[in-house]
Image (cartoon, rainbow, N blue to C red; front, side):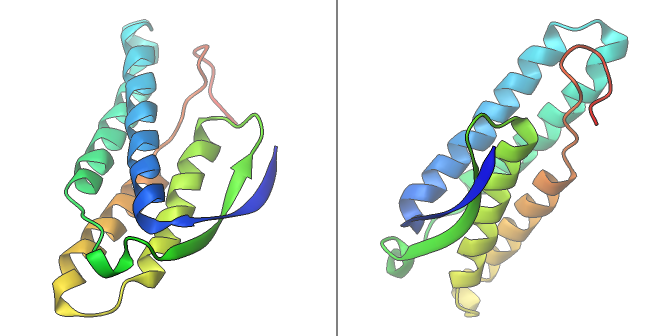
Length: 134
C-alpha cells in the first residue's frame, strides 16, 4: 500500500467517488446481513452512515464550469482496505471542495459536500471476522 497523487476531471472522479461510497455501503450491508446480530450492529451502522453520505452525494451536481476542470488529490494505491477506500473518496471531496468558488449558487453544494465528508470521516469499519479492527 502506498500513497500517490492522482489527477482527473472533477466530473469523472466525482462519479467514481459516488460509486465507491455505494460499493462500500453494499459491502457493509451484506456483511451485516451475514453476521450474528450481536456482531453485525457495527457493520449495519457503517452501512447506514455510508448510505446517508451516498444520498447526499447523489443530490450534488458538478457545476458546468467545473466539469472538465482537473483536480489533484492524494490517493492510496495497491491492495487497499475499506478505510483507505473511504479515505480516497474523502481526499478527493476535499480537493473538489477547494475548487468551488464561494458564490451563492454553490452554497448548498458546498454544504452537502462538507456534510458527506463529515459522515464518511466518522464511519468505523469493524473487522470482518467479528473482531475489532485496529
